[in-house]
Length: 191
Image 1 (cartoon, rainbow, N blue to C red):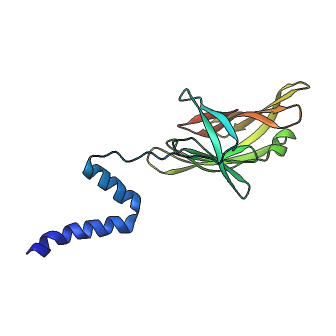
Image 2: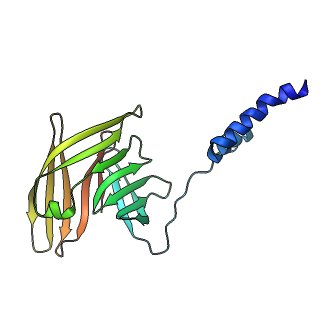
Image 3: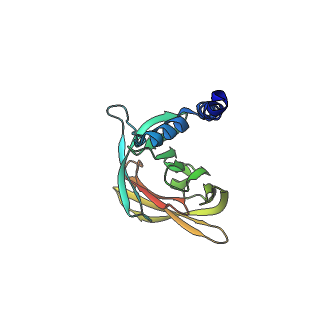
């Protein structure tokens, strides 16, 4: 009789263990009344840091480069959200709400050459459905001085016009950008 009472508890416990330890930690912290610790990201000493802002949300925060996998730089906020950047282009986010899951983006060389190109964004909507948007893009010179070049990438489809901006220093290095990350997140500024 005692075994039949304990069996469901053992089954739940084994199920949680087999799922993953995060589920077990969540259940155990709720059962004990303790909060689940927040993820805290740290980078190697001397790792690059930049400021990032989300225009739709009116917030700014520091991001730090945590690693480079192949040719993709992974930047993170100290409390966990991440931005994936390839050749200066934001190609993904995690932890910012409905995220940019992936993107097909041009190279900075394409932007600097003022060449027409296409972009494809794959984002999650509020119900975790993957939405794909394709754009045809052109590049315009916004301003050009001896010390700074500002280029606007104008991307269009039947419903939407996006205007990304890229600012280069006198040595053609990317200094700052304003790039679209998702319908919910809007534009991100990285400086």
